[in-house]
Length: 174
Image 1 (cartoon, rainbow, N blue to C red):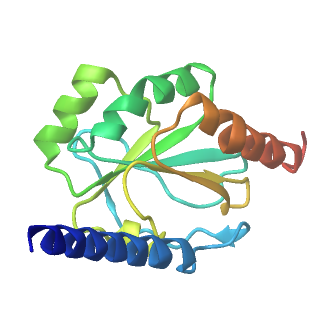
Image 2 (cartoon, helix red, strand yellow):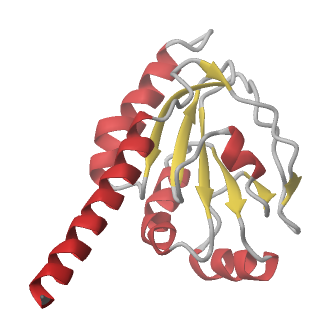
């Protein structure tokens, strides 16, 4: 009898995990070249904001929160990207201002501007599946790539650098 309950529990968990994976992987997400939606968010208190639109140069938008362990893991990579001269904007998702400030004071600030998204408005518009997630934006303000999860060396090789390079090659006057 005990085996029956254990097997049933395992099957139910597997079915739940499969359903979540199916809907996550098959849900429509903005295709490359999709213009960024208008984000009506305020800057994180004490930091400059940004306009999510065409800037004339490619950039990254990183969705993060101080409560997010993978965000802490990827933070050193974001600092290295900033040191390389890559423009990174942040969207602080569902966070307390004081916690976001403490996170940046402890680990450094890789962002050229930060918007606060306390209720998940931008995350819904951008169809973000979790934090961290990074969008690669071209000079026209179009999403040309995305990476769900912490930015690792593999992420840099597989998505971030190739998408940024392609975006730079298509930037006028380059």
